[in-house]
Length: 162
Ligand SMILES: CC(C)(COP(=O)(O)OP(=O)(O)OC[C@H]1O[C@@H](n2cnc3c(N)ncnc32)[C@H](O)[C@@H]1OP(=O)(O)O)[C@@H](O)C(=O)NCCC(=O)NCCS
Image (cartoon, rainbow, N blue to C red):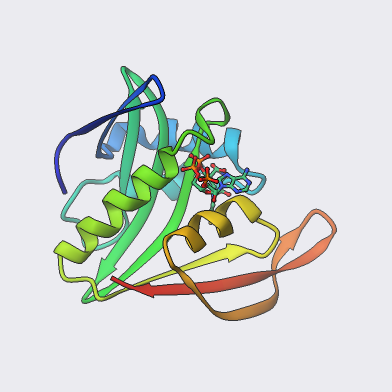
């Protein structure tokens, strides 16, 4: 993973780097602010353990010292999984998730990933549009998989070749 990448888009100056153990709290904060179904802090701890770990890893984006987005992923043999991606509401719709996902998929391909998988709530239009724009294709639907505010909702399983 490149240690540092900086871009400037529409007046925003982001840099990206692998997550550090001390980032878990901030990632949980971003997820709680952005997502209707956020992960707990504990779920972010292993992703922030450090690059090279055999489990989940995370890439974070920051503007100056503010963490504003992240993506959590894994690579097992030649199969990559995207587990979570979120951007602070104030930073959304400026291309930050596209930037994070693009860097992550390119890096995973460079590390030998052949396929990337993910799962998303059927009602999550923003994330589904994001993934569709990266040519993720629908593989299957797990009906009533997630608890939802009113009953349950389907999980949509998507994948693409890298
Ligand atoms: C999904 C999410 C990460 C997108 O972040 P973002 O930085 O705003 O996304 P980008 O600006 O890079 O947008 C990339 C594309 O995603 C889609 N998209 C993003 N937000 C959208 C929205 N609110 N409605 C519809 N499509 C949306 C669009 O196709 C967009 O391309 P466009 O701007 O050219 O139309 C953000 O909405 C978020 O944090 N959501 C809560 C967490 C979550 O649900 N994560 C997914 C877990 S599976």
